[in-house]
Length: 452
Image: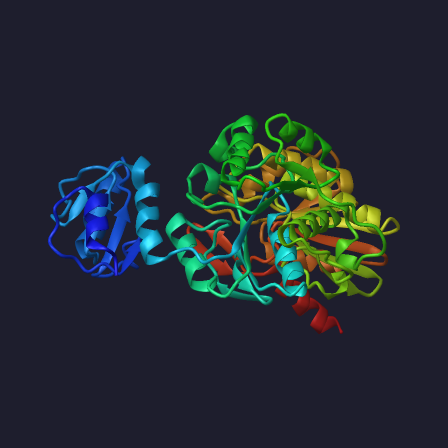
């Protein structure tokens, strides 16, 4: 139970005795013995929604960022800039951090794969671990909780660490640029880190590449004194840029010898190198030859054979990620033709669409341009934006993704590869706020089962 004196100090009020057992940031989850944080938007619609939602919400005490006529008596107005420190004070009492090592990985691409590799390598070396990221809260090859973001909000993150981390030696966090900028990792200290890549993405949020870089560089503010951030050996430009602002960067060890098929591409080998460097440095151990026991993460270079062909599903959804995976495929399978199927998400950085079209055209023998998550946009317009970067006639537009995937699979002949990019592990297509069930992996498995 929360200490009343601490609560009084946080709220700077003289309060009657309160029973506080939890802390929330959404009205639908809050209970009568919880503190609820509610950010009131400036927009007229947001103001109206506050009146509607707070009227039916349950809470012992409400904290808002600005005053409002509908604000109830049992509430306080506290500037939003102070919320992280206040939330941390509450969470330190209600959800204290377990004694385990914290590892963070960031990068435009590679976070999910590397986090999963660190988790599995740590477990294969006898350590008990968990990860929090795009695939949810994971341990022992299982997703224990899914939350739909790369990095959860601060309150949820602290709850996950407390609830799932009691018996763990370490936790790997996927740390997005949004999370650093929005202080979702407030007060945490990382024992080790990794920065996998840096290329264009999220310019709808950060506006410029310099702002995007600065947001990711906030990682160094969270490191313990002797902590290091590992950089892939091939990311020399990133390493040089970071070396100018910090001495806490280190190049990952180079992996040599034969590795499983999943690591046949340069980018997955780089992810493995960072994971090995982090695990060995964190626990002062040698990983050894355990790589054939690694299970590839969901939707990351998922590969199936079909006659003399290969079908690959990958989450690659940025220009750099698409370029890297195509380069990796052509390097690993030089005698195969490469067909590429992809789309771009709606309500996101439009400038990357023609770039991805150009990249797909440069690598692909044939390209299928289709839908991804159009959200509120017209998918045909998104496809046209992509095709604006293409100059050949080696592509076709198919709006409905299931139709495009089936056509691409049926068109495979001999010694070809079909890359389905952009969806990876996702099991839905998001249109106008509704998630319609869909999975590239399930479409492939359904096709192969019928053809066998």
